[in-house]
Amino acid sequence: MPARNESTKQPILYIDEHTENVQEKKSSLAIFFILLVIVAATLVVHVLIISKLYFIPESLAIVILGASIGLGLSYSKRDWTEVETFSPNIFFLVLLPPIIFESGYNLHKGDFFTNMFPILSFAILGTVISALTIGSSLYILGQADLIYKLTAEESFTFGSMISAVDPVATLAIFQALNVERMLYMLVFGESMLNDAVAIVLTSTCQQMSRETISSSNFESLFFAVISRFTYVFFVSALVGAFVGFISALLFKHVDLRKTPSLEFALLLIFAYLPYGLAEAISLSGIMAILSCSITMSQYTHFNISPITQITMQQTFRTLAFVAETCTFAYLGLALFTIKLQFQPMLISWSILLCFIGRALNVFPLAYVVNKCRHAQISIKNQFIMCYSGMRGAVAFALSLHISVENEETKRILLTATLVIVLFTIIFLGGTTLPVLRILSYLFPERKRRKYGLRSASNRSRSAVLLSKTQEMVIFDQSEYLTSDVEENFKNGWRIE
Image (cartoon, rainbow, N blue to C red):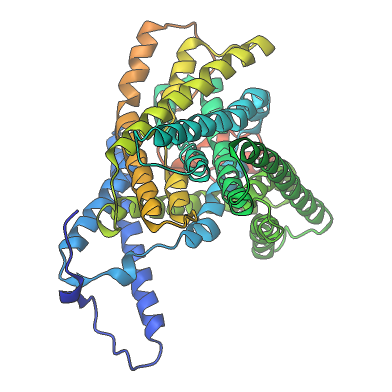
């Protein structure tokens, strides 16, 4: 990383420190900078879409954009500290909720509930297996002085943190290659729940380590974490579902269809309400908002006007896109603007253990799932699921958010997470397309129900979905649109 002599750098714009509203002016400058980055990232995504460059993941392109900006700032003679800082609280309070809510609200529930058992198995048990594999292995390797030594609490916190997968690039390629609906839903459903599980598991490890660090041993800490995780996960889900049912009853008995602005405003409040409630009572806001979003899409959605149905879906797609863009751009920016500390052996072993942990949860759980239901997960699809374990925004944000007493250890874990995320995005995301084609050649299968592109005659209404902002075309496949909205879709969206 290029060295920066902070003492010789001048402010971006001269702001008289003796005038009023100095902080307000600095905040305005930071917002302006963020908006410029979002504009640039949106244009980059647009170029990827129209160019049909399926082998380049959106997330990778945005990370490269952020890294390019960070490299430029590092050589700049101006001091960009005010605009390049990023608070983890902003991610968890502002950016993450719309990402999670959108994934649950726009979920294709027919496929999701059909594959509920395997999705829950991979998302919950799989994440726990991966976290335990990575955490215990790193702890043992550290005790053997083969890598940087971490405590048991730090090892399991780190293992939980980097067990959060983000296969957005794989899902985009799935849609381009017309893969089976079951495979798409297994990967999508697992990733949707996996974020919540990884966040709950990480926060549980942090909380339990603070409570038992002075007296606990390895075994007692393990069982304490698992019991606390189970309680937080399921109670948070119940809180979210409860808020979702309340919203459905409210919109059923209070007719706001003639005032869409009030209707939409109330929906936005209910969308964020479970997050605040769950966090206030020491539960998981992320799990609560995910549960609430699925409940609202199943029940509340049918009690609102057609125009609000469309507005709700597209608004959260847009918010989720902007939030993910900000996070991946900052991930690239962090390469040159955050003080990093590399531990090559820790990073190398962590990457290897990510693959081992992924394999140890996918293949055994797939075997159990195949024994318990008729619809089988083929060996080809198991390989694809194993290969789709990219790490992304959630893992990086958690690395910024975790509380570690030793500042050096925190920088080391942040650096390791950053490298792991970049490696999996570049390597796994960049090679997914050729790997899928090789597997299709090695494991030819009979024709099944597909998810993705339709025939050429139907392409006027369906296209490759590389971005949340292009997903409006999936409405004609959606199971939860009312007949009024379907009719308006056929008539060119003429809503009166």
